[in-house]
Length: 257
Ligand SMILES: C[S@@+](CC[C@H](N)C(=O)[O-])C[C@H]1O[C@@H](n2cnc3c(N)ncnc32)[C@H](O)[C@@H]1O
Image (cartoon, rainbow, N blue to C red; front, side, top):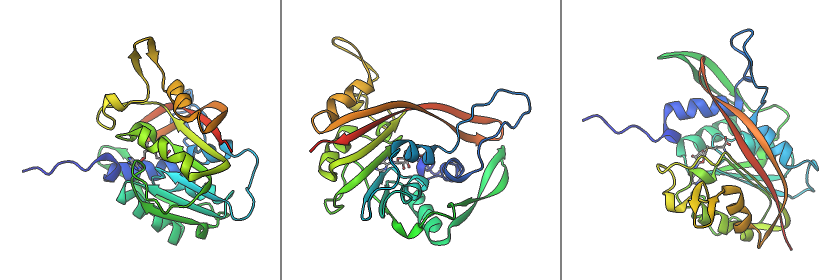
């Protein structure tokens, strides 16, 4: 019998694509003369754009939910003394821990078919890796002993959860008054990750189309103030001739007193 394929976030392909997405070379036009979007490094931009005030006071804590292979958690360490990176994928967390210990990790990026190109993921040398701790965990059933945070990042997580509202409901209790919540998502709802009756939006409703942006405002408004909304485009490389071009929406929220 053929074994079932590994879920994407536990697979060789998923690991290589996310190492490349977080640590790979800046996506450059592989073919001279063709138009190419200049998007930069997505995890680094999520953090820098979400924290325009610069580093937080000593002792500040950040939580990166759905941290994958860890780049945004390392970037948060530029701003906070302590960072907890949490992801459901044991494979991704193992890679993030290797990057924390050694500062680098070798991998292979797909060139074409079975052909690959050797590459090395590296944490920027000016980041204090000792500030970051990685753990496996479920963002919809978080442990009760995480403590309180000054920043939470949920980058492209909500539309990969079986029950996004269960995750959102924990945020008020995890964030101190004045804390910042950085939420990005392209709102790519798929039944394979989220049963349609748990989608936050992207469906027709009784009074018209229901958008995820409006549903987030409704869910978060009792405890958070929306302070900024902007677009964050990114490229996820599959192989030399194929990239996914996506435009996430970033919403930045501040925890009310
Ligand atoms: C689209 S990726 C985004 C990863 C990363 N934040 C980024 O922006 O590159 C979604 C991530 O959520 C993780 N994930 C999926 N379900 C989860 C859950 N229930 N709890 C925690 N992480 C989860 C996946 O393993 C994956 O790393």
